[in-house]
Image (cartoon, rainbow, N blue to C red; front, side, top):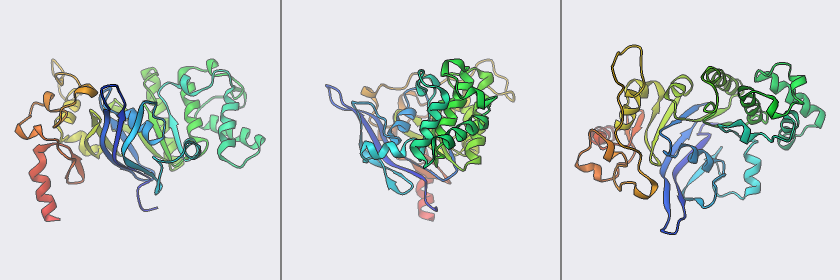
Length: 329
């Protein structure tokens, strides 16, 4: 396969209200290559989780995809009937949610949930499916999997439940895994273990990952590329090392400056003034303009995602550099 595994183009998601539609995602575009880890980062309400839900067709009413398209492995999937989408979701696209208790049926044994998932997506008998379930529990680090397979979710710790959820997401051997804040509900000491496990397992099985998080530390450790979202739009996207070392967009610069480091001693951390706008009051121009320390006249006009080298930034500060690069090409 030479093209992207997942291609999202000009994705627009709206929520119907009495006063008219509220735009939650506005022109979101990105690609994920086979085997690549794309981190999606931003404040709460930026649209990260909503993007993941739109990809897997789980938008709650009154939310709907109002524009753009989503292609997976070359096939358009945003307009598929639910019966067809269910076969893709869980089979070719695995999903890991932030709270394992919402992903696991509390009335079913862990083994039954894994076995049913395997049977739904693989042509195996029940005995073979159970053997694979035990193998997956062992692979995600559950001790004595042949004994723990008959346990219920409440008999596992939070970290162990999240390991089971990872096994559920990967047991059908999907090509893409969408991990939505997979460590938020866990203790800090367990978070690193889960992220390391997810990274190692997906690379071992050749799966691409869309890792949704608000933690830039997790992104820096795990992702190949990162998309920074703000107010339902992509503010910056690029290779993770370049973005961490030299952020372009003022919002990304603010995020990076707010992270404490051992190299720089400061009495107070930098902060971004103000708050993200509500869906009903997003500025017509640059959504970040009211909080931006480098705002100028043209910010009243919405900036497109401009190409700067191998990266993209939606900021008028880079208009001339982007235009010059287009002329050279």
